[in-house]
Image (cartoon, rainbow, N blue to C red; front, side, top):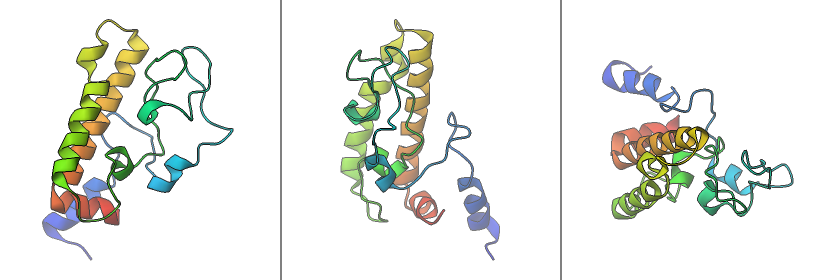
Length: 143
C-alpha cells in the first residue's frame, strides 16, 4: 500500500529507538497505572515506582532508575498525543530532561547509573527528534 519514501519511513518507525532494544512503547495511559506492582529500586530495593521524579530517580536513595518501558514519546515529552505539538514547549521539555539525565552529569556515578543515563538520554533525543519533525510525528502517531 505504502511505497517509496513514506513506505520506507513507516517500516523504519516500527523499529525500536536506539538504546532501548526489546522495549515496547505503550500509550500515555499506561504511565499512570503504577500500582502495587511498581518496580523496586535497583540500588536500595525501595519502591521505585510512584513518587519517582518524572520516573527517573528513586525517591529514597535518588539513584537513577532504568527507563520506563511503558512510556511513549508523547508522555515522556509531556505533550498531548496529537499531531499538533507546541514546539517551544517541546524544546523546553527536551532541555529540562537533558539537564536531568545527560551522561555528563553521571561521570562520577556507578556504571549502572552511567548506563541508565545513556539509555535515558538516547530515548529523550529520539523522542525530541521524532516529535519535532511533523512527518516523523505523524508516522509515530500511526505506528
